Image (cartoon, rainbow, N blue to C red; front, side, top):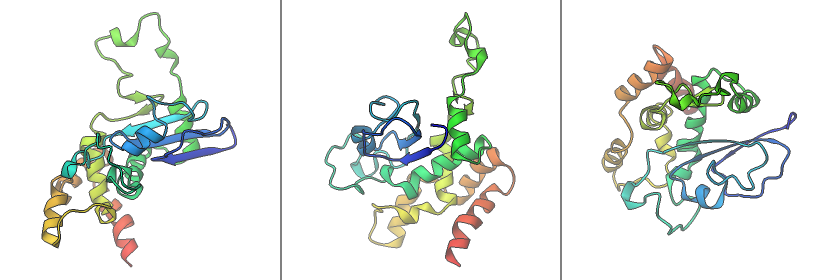
Length: 213
């Protein structure tokens, strides 16, 4: 556990051996990961002391293919299982919001137990529950999947990696994307609120312009 850190994204396996420090990441509307992988609600086989991160993808319910659809035809059936267009951005947000630069640090911070939480009085009984939006010592904003994740997908131009884009023409595809992703101006507002001025341009230049050179 001290020597090896393993990160899985949308894993469809329930037989992870004990030993490594596991970080399992998946979307709540990813039917494949939920049914055939390991989650916080279904941790059996996920490895001892594993850490789990989940959020809703912006693709939930699009084109009638909601998270309850069991007519799975392939691993690319639904974009909530798409690492390039969802989960990578989610992982980046968690690490950047908390100022974390390594997976080992992410694991240790998520497993941290605040001594103040071990109280005679349950923290949920206080007027303000300071543990509500935390996992270990990590801060997980309540709007991470409603605002920040779609904005991050837009900033990284990740919609180009969608498995199931809708629309036979480019205009139809653009209209489809606007239904679940913010435009660049809205995405800029969300990201700069958390990361400061020019955050959107910084992310876009690194992820988009550099890839097109």
